[in-house]
Amino acid sequence: PGTPLTHILAAAFGVVVAYASALTLVVLEATRGGMYLARLLEHDVAQGTGPLDTLIRGAERQFLGRR
Image (cartoon, rainbow, N blue to C red; front, side):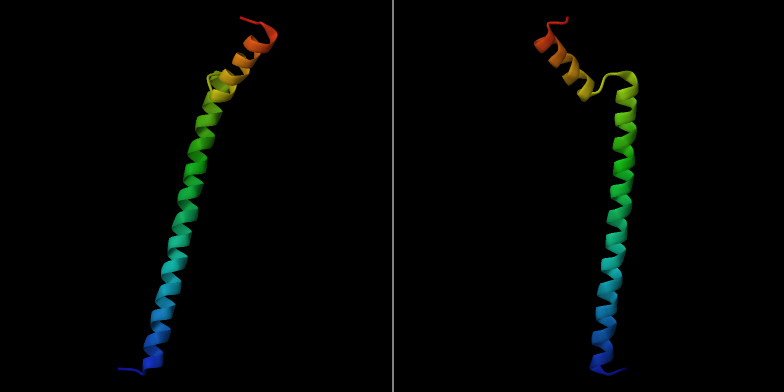
């Protein structure tokens, strides 16, 4: 029971709530992923085994003649 306008407004509200929930979930997952990548990079930098360290060592060998 209710007017068609009530049903349309209820459906629109449902869509808005669903969109907001999905957006919140995306933000949370992106934050978790960013934290995971930050931990990986921190570990790589601490160990000196990351791709950036390898690239720098390779450049040193190539341009400066270090072995």
